[in-house]
Image 1 (spheres, rainbow, N blue to C red):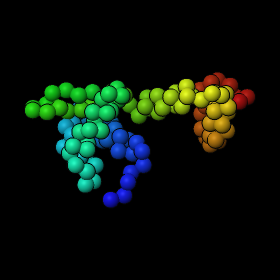
Image 2: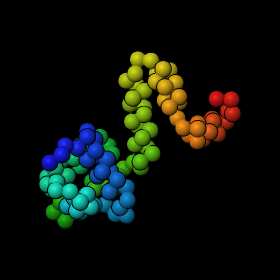
Image 3: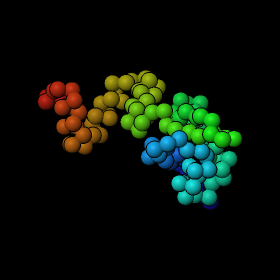
Image 4: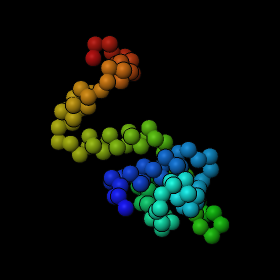
Length: 118
């Protein structure tokens, strides 16, 4: 079996939860992933996501059901913040990030900042 990149399973599980209209049990999540993962693998990752504050769980029958506690954009903001806080030169990281933006994203950033001179 091919190894997934780090964080890929967490992201796939979050994607399932973001699209759900109700809390899901690990087996329901596993079924939506369409992979040969074991139920216990999904349950383990859900426990890690809960410890990170990304999902909440509630009692459901004899087990638990999970729902996302933050949306996708909030998760991206959190990750960007983690990268910035770990950098010794935040200005250089920000400059590199801004320099990598597409023209469309740069226009959107300028509009958000209210500065057409960026």
